[in-house]
Length: 225
Image (cartoon, rainbow, N blue to C red; front, side, top):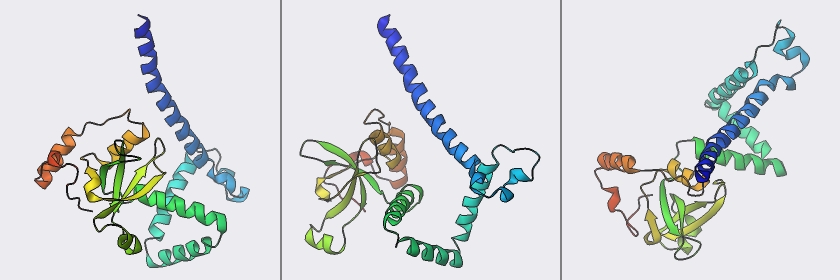
């Protein structure tokens, strides 16, 4: 009975705590966006001219502003203006580091450039211990000349914060390709292995699409990057 009560309590924690944290963060974001007009002069705030406050107006304006910026920066003049702004920003010592790091992070996770091409296993930090990594391509230039011709670039994220990690160059024969999706790999890493997604449906779909049996891939198989 005591074990059952403890189990129920832990199960409840696993549901309530993530939900509470998610709602709390969401409320902070919504509150910040809803109060965006506070940075404007009193004469430019909508509440000055409206008979009552409209909840969520700041959120709508923020979303609309982001959309407009996205539209403007996709044309020639917008790209040119963005380039000039980033060039000026690159001359500010501290701000340029924060901006560039944030931009690279956003481009990695929110664009379709396939920066993380495949999930792999690699023996790290020593033989017998395996870490999940992501193929990012192949070394070029001097890195390629000073390493092996069959070397690949691998990013090894840390747990529970996958935005930091290690960049290593390893031989293809030392890489174990996985069928796991990039999104599922991030779930495993961020939860420290607590979440282990079932990829049977994914493997079947990819095998049918490509006409290959991903289950036959093993350590040392050729990897397309």
